[in-house]
Length: 316
Image 1 (cartoon, rainbow, N blue to C red):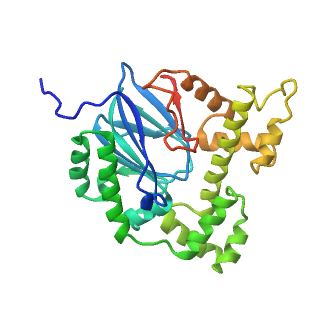
Image 2: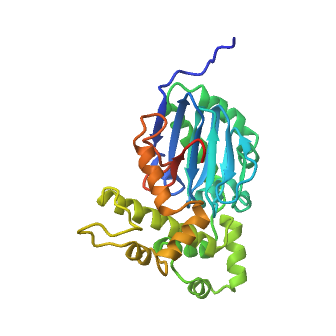
């Protein structure tokens, strides 16, 4: 029987903050060590985050939550911006860490490959190159999570020092999209850049891997998730899409309008098309996940300040 030589760390999840100069590009680090008795399935919703997950032990299978296909197994994986949610499953044993990059950080670290990664998953080594294997090995044998996070600071700091910058016009378009939660008219972006609509889409895709309208949909979804979860916390779980509880002032239609949808049914259709389930089902699964003990649940979201994930039952 082969005995692991990896340092012993407690089960669960540990969050790390990147060094200050890296924060425009790195949103955070997330270390995890799980040893569960059953498989675990997570639903990862579309976000404005590019993720690099480095595996020390275990593999993860990924498939689209809206249009399911045979799952693809990965050890270390890079995931670009996606318009639809992902179902991620592992056998219960998983040890590694994830790096959450801003789209600008991904472009600075990956170069043109960042654009090609949009809507896809890829082996992390295909994106970051052959040196990634040596980095992953050093990370795995580091004595602690803080030591690992410090190593990541050094690695990504070196990448960013020589990486390419975004086109200033693409940077301006992204700021407008983020500032308005995806509600700025595409025509206003065309006018602001002085580009044709076609050139705007091509240049934006080269940098982020998606068209501006698709990125806008992700940002609007994130705004919607933040509004819905905040409303759920305030009303202690009262259904935001059903009958208005006594004394409540906010309806599902109010929330839909606030998030930029025509009405409640428009919100529901768009949510299902991107997440693969209704808003109420998503919120219910998060309530269930929040009640689970560590390490399977409780720490649900991958990125601080964003609604990214929930847990799924074995049957989906």
